[in-house]
Amino acid sequence: MELDEELRNLVIQACGYPPGSPQRQKLLTQIIRLTSGRLWRESTPYYQDALQQTWLYFCRNICDGLTGQTYDPSYGTVVTWLNAYLKRRLQDFYLNYHREQALTVPLQVRQSWASGNGEIVDLTENLQATPQVPPILENVQIWAETDADGELRRTYVKGRPDVNCQVLILKRLPPEVSWKELSEEFGLPVPTLSSFYQRQCLPRLRNFAESEGIL
Image 1 (cartoon, rainbow, N blue to C red):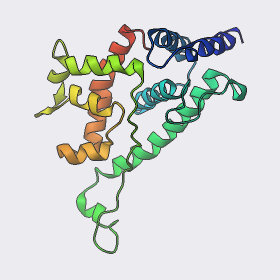
Image 2 (image 1 turned 135 degrees about the vertical axis):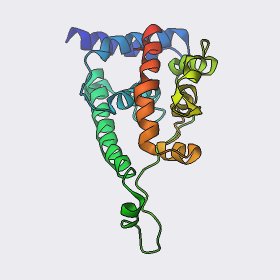
Image 3 (image 1 turned 90 degrees about the vertical axis):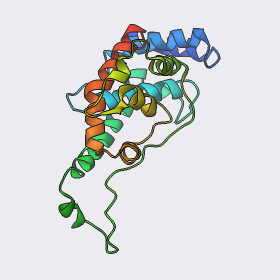
Image 4 (image 1 turned 180 degrees about the vertical axis):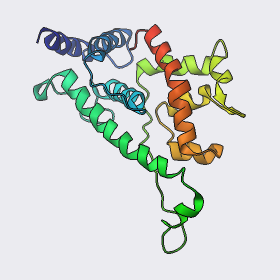
C-alpha cells in the first residue's frame, strides 16, 4: 500500500510539469523503476514486445492521454492500470503470433484459404500508428540513429545487411511500422523479421534502456 501511495504521488508530481521537461522525465523514469518489478510476467516469445508497448503506452497516457485514457487513480493503482494494458497486448500478440505462424505454411496450402476471387486471405493486422514520441523515447531514437559503435548495423538478418537492428528498432518506434509492411518492404516473412527482432534487437534495446535508467 505504501508503494502504491508513493507511485500515486509521483504521478501527481510528474504531471505537474510540462511535457518533455527534465523534471517530468526524471519522475516518469522513477515510476518505471518502481513498477517494473511488479508487472505481470510470462515466458512467451512476444512478452518483451508487449512490455515495450506497455511502456510506450505509459509514457503517452500517464499524464496527457495522447493515445488513450489518461491514468485515473480512482480506478486503481498504477500497477493495476499497466497490468491491464499489458495483458491486453499479450492477448493481441498471442493472436497475431498464431496468424504469423500461418504464413510459414506452403503456398499451396495457403491458397486453399483464398477467397473466391483468388486473393490470399490477409493473415496479419496493421498496428495503429501515432505521430507522438514520448520524451523518454527521444534518447532511444538518438541512440539507434547514432549507433556509435556500429553494433546495431553489424547485427543483421543472415545475408541481408540492409535488414539490421538499427533499421528495425527505428521502424518499430512510434509511429510503428507493422510487421506486414516490413515484410513487404524487405521481401522477408513476418516470422523471420519478428524472430530476429526478438532475439537480436530487443536485448540490445533493453540493455540501453537499463543503462539509461529507463527500465
